[in-house]
Image (tube, rainbow, N blue to C red):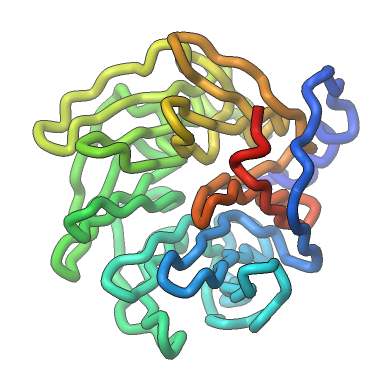
Length: 286
């Protein structure tokens, strides 16, 4: 990921902002170090923030997870430390799963102690989504792979050329929704062909594009609110709603809007290059 932050900072400075406005957040918190993802624990309301604290592929043991109260105030800045470049997260059986470049880390939510570290033959593990059966699906952004965490083991679940650098993942009933980055990836992480939204059956792994989400952008996070998918473009900071076969730009943020997530009635928006995370009440969204 050489020059990623430098070039995207320049992108941020020259971005043309459109009429789409930003929803008013109910809280904002600053002081993070490249926050990539935010996740709320539905049992406690506590919010977890992954801090890359370096370059996205740098194994520097400086990455960490912050723990916030439900109102966005910091409860513990370094709740779990000594990671490399932690990104996507999910909760399975009272354990926090964290994607960290080439490994999946598992932490006990009660103690913050790491209980597992599972290696993956991956370019860069990125996002994680858990299903109702306790399985978790992990994307490999620098490849065409999806891994699965099942019964305490990490396995390759799907490798398909139709998945051009899968990034965001979200479980929608019996399907896995995947937001791809696009291809081929240049040195500045832009692509000739933008990424798309894909739907994969958890039962038979059948893969289909989502109408309206084709070649939408360099996609990062994806969630579902009501009948609509919400997805964001990391490079240009756009937030889109995809519904009824079309995509609509809802809001414009700075470059570096990373892995959006939902929980507790909130939409979480990590601004990776600004070191900031905000939360928006989903009932206030257009």
